[in-house]
Length: 272
Image (cartoon, rainbow, N blue to C red; front, side, top):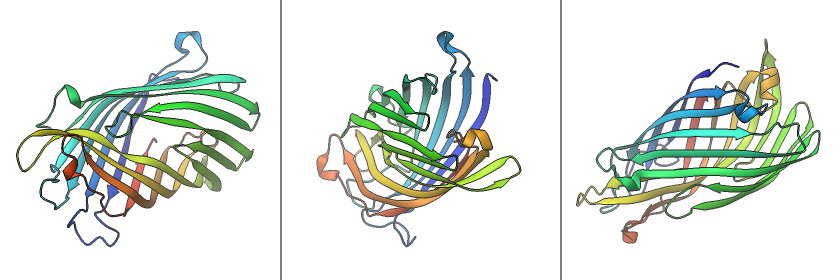
């Protein structure tokens, strides 16, 4: 196994509204450009599975909302180190662990409050050769929600179908076609989107902490090497969907909180 697994990139676009008519009122438009480098340490602590760690940088570009007192800066960033490790998936009992530490802020509002710790801890039970039960928690460290319960079942009824009925990130995948040694699958997925940052208020230059929360439902297409894609490891993807239950939450100024309009979402990348 190579120590450096390569560079990965992902782009996410959420327009201000569903008709692409620009940004007005409580609408928020965002562009996220994410770049990471993936490294692997084989046989971590003597185990058969590698330990992955991924330094990542995300540039966020925001437009809106056009509401006095709730304005967002034009840009912010997220710079963090991701780390994941799991036991051998062929074992009856196992675990899946992950943590993230990083800085999430506008460039002029960096402070100790910009540092966020996130992580996950899941236990696994391989019930049959084609089904695995997972349960545990996600720590997302946002101002509104700190902890999410997590759990569900991964079921592969045949070699062309992969149903990951898992909260908070379900994914139903099915084989579509093959090009050379690369498979193409289509899928349905959803997740709890957004994040948390420190910013400076546009109107009075005071520092505050914000959440941008939403729920995202998407349909997508992914490709990768035949054997790896069936294990859930893809080379590149593109997907589109719908964003709803959107929230803009200020920690110190609740009167500025908003519920932006529902919108669409487009994502694409390689190596995710």
